[in-house]
Structures are given as structure tokens and as C-alpha cells.
Amino acid sequence: MDDLKIFTGNANRPLAERICQYLGIPLGEAVVGRFSDGEIQVEFRQNVRGQDVYVIQPLSMPCNEHLMELLIMMDALKRASARCITAVVTYYAYARQDRKTAPRTPITAKLVADVLTTAGANRMLTMDLHAGQIQGFFNIPVDHLFAAPVTLEYIRERFSPEVVIVSPDAGGVERARAFAKRLNSSLAIIDKRREGAGIKAMTLIGNVWGKDAIILDDMISTGATLTMAAELLMRHGVRSVHACITHPVMSRNAVSNIQGSLVQSLAVTDTIPLSPEAAALEKIRVLSVAPLLGDAIRCIHNQDSLSSLFV
Image: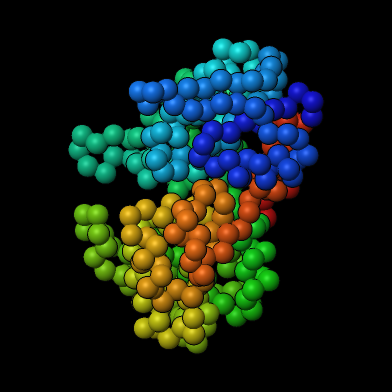
């Protein structure tokens, strides 16, 4: 792996360090700072000519800053004659804007895909996209990983098989069904209806009485959906409510919502770093996807199949 280099911006340096530690290679030396007027300054202090380069940068808050860092880093690598540039975007921002929901609105998920490719990305490695069809927005190879192996291991170690897997909306049914099948457990669905930016009503489909409920979702933003889902499940007789979320976006008043909710435990991954306030919550446990991403990078670099990383 002498011709492999891994760099990172400022979005999630701890994850990049854990991936490099897992692979047994040093993290590449790069300066990603700011000029006095706020413009992003990038300088790579290692030779990358003819190298296979991976840039680890989730588009977490502030997503526009981190997106610009990634674009400028890839442009610098392209101009430094890197052989292949892989954007390791562990969290893909703007993924919820994947279609026109009203007249004269953008499809920003496609726009972000276009600018990443134009900036120099030769391939994309991401995890738990909000909508799997976003892969089709790219004209470059996209390797779409799932945090399922890590989450399934956590559930098997902590809970009995007599749990019910709950999808908090119709869009997550496929994910929840796959988990329920692998755990040999039952499935429940919450029909969530929105009005504007808020949630109007929730209806539970399925039998959850007397069971421990595990809510699965790809991201948690404000925590409003999770809080209301927990209240609905408790009214239908579950013994306890837990949640497993891949991307802890945790915007606005998410920390206070989770703290005051009926959710007893919340497992998230380290695709996005937690804020100090969120990290201090006893309810939250962080599961690392660094080994999973490290194995994916090794497979891509060695031109091996990634099939073994899916369960």
C-alpha cells in the first residue's frame, strides 16, 4: 500500500485517524486553514503524483464550509497529478433534496454530485445515503456502504431476539425489514404525515405490546421524529424504546429533545463527530465505522470486491 495516501479536512479528523490506525498507515500531511478574509487555504505537504488518494470529509455542519474544503482539496490533488482521487463522504449533505417537492425548487443532491465530479473526484465512497438512488446522480463509480454490520453487532450483544424493529417513516421500511430479517424479529412501521416543516400526525402499524422497541433511521436532525415516535410506541405498550441512527446530525435543539425524550438509549456512528453537548449525554453511545471504511478503502485500492462488507 505504498502508493496509497489518506488525507482529511476539518470535518472529522478523529475518524480519519482511526481509519489510518486500522490500516496501519500514517495520515497524510495537509494544511486546511483559512486566509484572513475567511477563504479556505489548502496545501499538501506530501508528494501525491501517481498516487491513489482518499479524502475523508463528511459534509457535516457547517456543511457548506466542509463541502468547499473538500472541493478545494480535490482540485489541489488533481493539479498535483494524483492518479485517482476518491471522495470518502461518510455523510452526504443535501441528500434530502433529491427530487422536486414543489414548483421552482432545486434538486440539490444532484448539484452536489456534479460539483464533486467537476472538482476532481474519480470515485465516491459513502455510507447510508438518505435515498439509495442518489448513486445514479453520479457519473463516476459510487461505493455505497451501510452501517448495518456495526449496528447489528451492537443490537445482538445488547438486546434479546424478542425485540421489535421500528421504521419511523415509510422511507425507512426497507432498512427496518432487512434488520428484522437478520435478527429474526418482528417489524413495525410508523406512518408519519408532515405539514410544512413539522410533523402533523403519526400512526403505528404492527404489534409492539410488551416488547423492547428499536427505532432505526439513517439520520437524526432535530430529534422531533424520534421523540414523537417514542411517545407513540410507549402508548402502545412497549417495555422500552431504543434507537440506532447512522448519522448524528444533531441540529438546533436536538440535544434537549433527546434528553427529555422517552428514548432510553441512542446508538450512533462516528460518521459525524458529536458536539460536546451531545457527547455528554449518557443516553448516547458511539459505534465506530472506521474498520468498515478501512476495509472498503483496502478493497478499492487492491481492486477487490466489496461484497464481503455487506451482510
